Length: 124
Image (cartoon, rainbow, N blue to C red; front, side):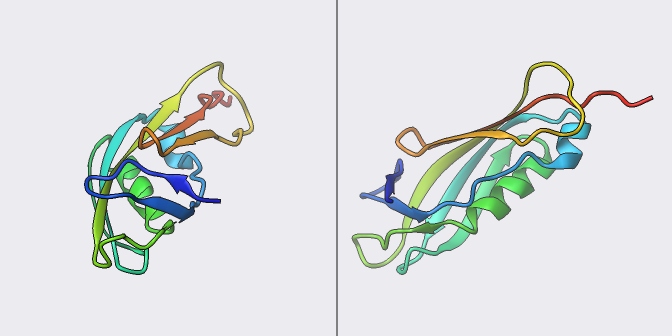
């Protein structure tokens, strides 16, 4: 399956995407926010560099490590290409225990990855 991404230059598509989870430490700390990534794609579709800014550092690190596992189609130019992605970490709903799996929506046409989870239930 190929998914179109929002490129900075040229046509780009994804061949393999690792679906992210919500980091346990971030959920426990009620850390949420948006991470904006600029991903450099090498000639063979591999991620060669990721620049990120935005949310708390733990979320930035998580988004960068996740996208490094992705594999894109080779750039049409034959060299490198860059795309922008937005990872949006959200904690919504009623507190739950144990930790639920995150609900993830990946929309590469818009360049967004939304990761939602419920807040942790306070333990006595």
